[in-house]
Every structure is written in structure tokens, then in C-alpha cells.
Length: 175
Image (cartoon, rainbow, N blue to C red; front, side, top):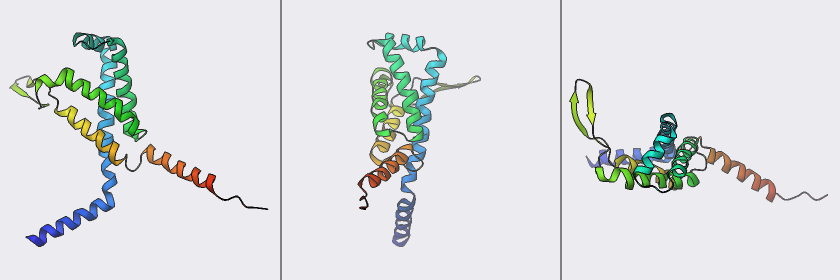
């Protein structure tokens, strides 16, 4: 049994050493798409509907805050999806999540799925808690700390920066 555990541990270490950075891709895809979907839903339902919600829960300057939230969700979501400027867009995205957690989801507890009943019309669910907000925050923190991974605009920009620095610092040939 000990040999099996050692073998599994070594196999896992090898996989992580070869493919560890690829773990950022599913995080980017789900977080980026999720934020963009929430921003699009607010546009599709009519931004004035979201303004009314913010006004009802006492958010100051609800018109400005509704558009700020929509922009953060759409632009930040796209940026995370393609892995661009992730450290910068993560901060306002985290603020949106924290505001949602404390103003909307906290009173409903932790679980995001609360099955109330199953009827002929289908499953009936209660109000979502803050579980999903925490999952999004954990994903953003991971991307912030560990990087955007392969196929990210951030990585492409870093390679351009390195190439430019090499060009600038290269010695000039004397005549």
C-alpha cells in the first residue's frame, strides 16, 4: 500500500511539473464566461431593472453603480477569458463579488443550490447563498497569484516586453 501511495504521489508530481500551468485555463474560461453572462443578462433584461434592484437594497448612486457593475462584468470577464490584465481586472471583479455577497447572498446562508420541491413543472429552488461568490473569489485569487497560464494575452505581452528589453539592452556594435 505504501508503494502504491508513493507511486501515485510521484505520478502526480510529474503531472504537475509538466502541466501545472494549464490549470489556469479552465479557471479563466468559467470565471470569464460567468462574469460576461451576468453582465449580458443585466443588459438583456434592461439596465433600468438592475438600477431598481440596486436602489431597493440601498446601494448609493444606483444608476452609476449599475453601469459600473455591468462594465466590470463584461470587460473584466472578457479580460479573464483571454488572460489579459488579470491582476488588474481581478480587483474590481472581486469588489463586485464582495458587494453581492454582503448585500444580497449572505442572508441566505452558504449553499448556492437550495432544492425546495420537485413538482410537475420541475425543480423549485430557493434563494442562492454566497457559495458561488466564494468559488469565484477563490478562482480570481488563484489566477492573481499563480498567473493566467498558457494561451494568455498576459503571457504574450510579457514575451514582447522581454524581447524589447533584450533589444534595448543589446550592445551597439562599434564601427
